[in-house]
Image (cartoon, rainbow, N blue to C red; front, top):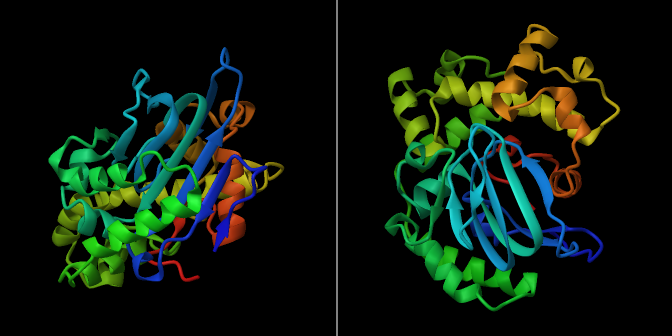
Length: 293
């Protein structure tokens, strides 16, 4: 499954079937704007990702920090806050890394890289340096996706005893009925103490924070798909009222809901709409542990 419409600024290509447990999608941004202009967008919290800038450049940061130049090739840890991005003309290829993929492909504790961007010079990201070396100079998305598949398939060469627990946690987090840490423990059969350790190590945040993020993103995703939908009508069942949601919005996005809707979002809007159309999930973090074709 893919989208390669030249009129869209973002394209998606699905990874090989055997990688769907580890990688959400491959995605490609092609932004073309005048040299004296710069586009700004706000990217919602999500799981980890790897980015390869094939041409152009960008800068960005978590909303609470000043923007910095972004390394041409990097790995970003799972985010618990929105990220600001500023770019001129740019062609970028990315890999969405699911929690199980972080565990298998990176192996470093996810909470060490939560809300951080890492240059590929870090030893934990050696696999992605190999990918960067193989795709640098390419421009065709299908050729790049084939290289992604080749390297990643070779890296997943043996089973791991934690895979089942990680996927069970991910599946429980994606279930809107999970409202508390005890719900996660019951759904997964994992003690709350071990759940805390695994969530920090593999998912980047403690389970209570992850549940808050999922609750928030379910509401955000509904409004991103239907801008005419009022926030009050989109509220997740776990919110007490609009004020409860507004506090979460300020915490996760660094602004109010009305400020967010008023800003242009030239990357996140088409990306969300296309993702929902192709995969049924408007946001990466709402996707469960595996997406079948």
